[in-house]
Image (cartoon, rainbow over all chains, first blue to last red; front, side, top):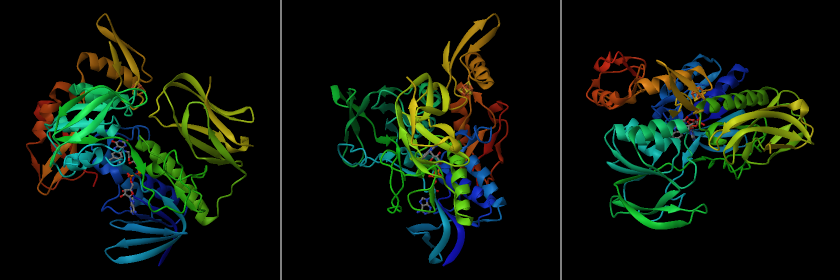
Length: 406
Length: 110
Ligand SMILES: Cc1cc2nc3c(=O)[nH]c(=O)nc-3n(C[C@H](O)[C@H](O)[C@H](O)COP(=O)(O)OP(=O)(O)OC[C@H]3O[C@@H](n4cnc5c(N)ncnc54)[C@H](O)[C@@H]3O)c2cc1C
Ligand code: SF4
């Protein structure tokens, strides 16, 4: 049994940022990571486009991870344990397994930063046979970028998430033919810049309101039947056969919450319910990054996780001082808001949220008891982008409603 | 000409119009968008990220600056020809690739 002030579970960008802030606030901090190196999913995201907001320069995923690993090294209060699995969390005791065997760490506070996993064929009830050649965009990314192998030659990508778009370009440049990207919705889930530089640059067709009816193939994928769908996702018109040997799924991520049966889960985000200190329903257990809710930009992961780390250190060393607790309600055109609860008192509560549909030239505001506590003007807001509004806690005197005006 | 700026995740919708010998960009929210708009109509460029072979596996690399868009595939293919010995993060893998005045840099992150 070891003891420490703060244990951070997961050594991706979220875990590294949380640990750095925890250490800077004076807490003895341990990071536990199951891979051999810190960096998380960034290590396989070799394209550029990370860090513009945080480092003011455009970095690739591994470069962003490298910069943070260097910052972690500088903190004397941080102990890094790689190639180490967390298998159980009970109260504030964490069970770990590595080549030295099984051990326990007793902590003053815990930060959960285990990231998210991709939705699979089973998660989306993909119909048809189960031949080889159906994989997630992240698996395809790992194969191509880490192992240097092509997953296939003729590829259909289901879903317009960013990882799928990035892989469409990557596989094309490596000599594969991406026959189409299919998106069941009316809007793409990936960023516009990725539609332009990953699909349009290579003339890869993007078929909107279209999905796979069925996968065909005995041992290996031989093709897919695709069909257009209406606004209620019913198939419309003739189904069409597209010959291919590989189907790549880019249909979203879900927080990896298997270890956390003790905390309340937010049914909208699939991550834990947290308050404005990023504390879950379990006292002294904090959450951040993709484990809390799926992020599209690593820079936001970093900022959010720094708060979680600082609060965890506070809790372990002195106990967080909180005022009265109130609810956060997602109103007009808000898909979800994190945190679910805020407190009155000192400092600032940051509300992170996503929109339900496109918003152009509108105010988004936080209201409580008919008083506007905070607002911001949005020129062009998309459902895929995470937004933030800051509310000064001294203004909070009741439940707060977040809404798009008008 | 209507374009989507790809210089950051905001993705501003740009309108680039010719005025005399120069171009005027509107719709951008920052100066990077203006630069992109002009460059894109005159001679579009793109950063290249890919992997290079090493003696034990593969390592990620990038170009030190954007290259002309129509040379992207050539650059990827050229990088595919080399095998690096013991590459370190930040090393120059290829100097002045294909005479484009751009280097290829190791981005292994390790
Ligand atoms: C396949 C994939 C590709 C992505 N590509 C992009 C992209 O191109 N651009 C972009 O901006 N964002 C991308 N993202 C989003 C990206 O995940 C986030 O920007 C960011 O990396 C999330 O950071 P994180 O630290 O929360 O999670 P992660 O980076 O996933 O890190 C979580 C870490 O926790 C560790 N862990 C989990 N469980 C345990 C356990 N029980 N014990 C010990 N360690 C554990 C994992 O090994 C991992 O290292 C991608 C996500 C995925 C899944
Ligand atoms: S103009 Fe500026 S803010 Fe808009 S997408 Fe381009 S770089 Fe981003």
